[in-house]
Amino acid sequence: MREFFHLSDPEDAEIESQVEIEEEPEFARPSGEEMAEDTSMEDAINAYKKIFETKELTEDERAELDKKVKEMETREIIDMDPVHEITEIPLAGKGKISIGPPNLTRFEKARILGARALQLSQGAPPFIGIPGDARTSLDIALKELDDFAIPIVIKRRLPNGDYQNIPIDYFN
Image (cartoon, rainbow, N blue to C red):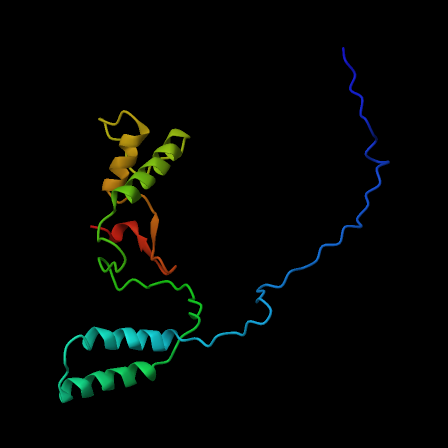
């Protein structure tokens, strides 16, 4: 049998930390270059004017264009979006589902059936009497779902994080 020999003992090793790391600033501007003024609003207004100035404008059209340009100039510029707080959308009543379709999607149905069939196969008691034609735990789970006997709540989410908790018996 072979013995393993270590070249050095990790306890005896000395670690030298003389390497100095110089931190870089977040944004480095080349020397001699000044920060340019933000001209995105002026560029947008000029592009908007070019669209309408391709043909000769009447006095009324010119006044309307100037009015729209002045409106654009006075708009509030939002630099940063406010943080959205996630909220629960309340149910308005039975059958009043505001997020998604009024019935279970195939994905929700598959997830419920899979989870319930697994529970049944591991010995969980069924919520209904076992039907005579049931051969697998999936058949029992399907019958439970059809009878709305499974006490489960579906959580549907919107892309902004808002959600709605929907009891299974609210679906069609």
